[in-house]
Image (cartoon, rainbow, N blue to C red):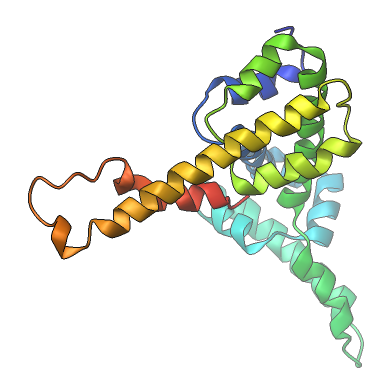
Length: 221
């Protein structure tokens, strides 16, 4: 596979071949964004303007709380609260509509989504142009349901042309196989609680991890 600065992080995510490669891309981008904002970036004026305006979602705030840098977080929150007060509570007549934007935005989410859009487009373009990557993509063990939907919905407007049908069919086959495997393991897991299957030698097979795999397959990102 021919690699460059755009394709290297994508190929790295796919070469692991364990779980959903798009989840790995998301996790990498999220970690980079969190490290960035919890580092020296929080003192950069243009970054502080963004964090003051966008704030952070609860999920990313919880993550930031667990990291080193409580002073950085406190400083960002202080100036963010100043902006909330100025934009939504500075008049005698309080306007609830001015609160809504602060509840729906997140600096980290926006940075991650920007990166995801570019990386997903790289997936399409590389699949179209690179035979080795097509084989790598089609040999993936699974994609989570949420990222399956994203890839399917984005394909019609992507750089896919000649290999669009192969992309869509291959992706659907991978996810359909995962779905059937998890369904079977969940059914087997439930059956193991039947009194007729009791005993020290009962065979759980792969069903012991069925719940965890089902939750992961549904996807959180």
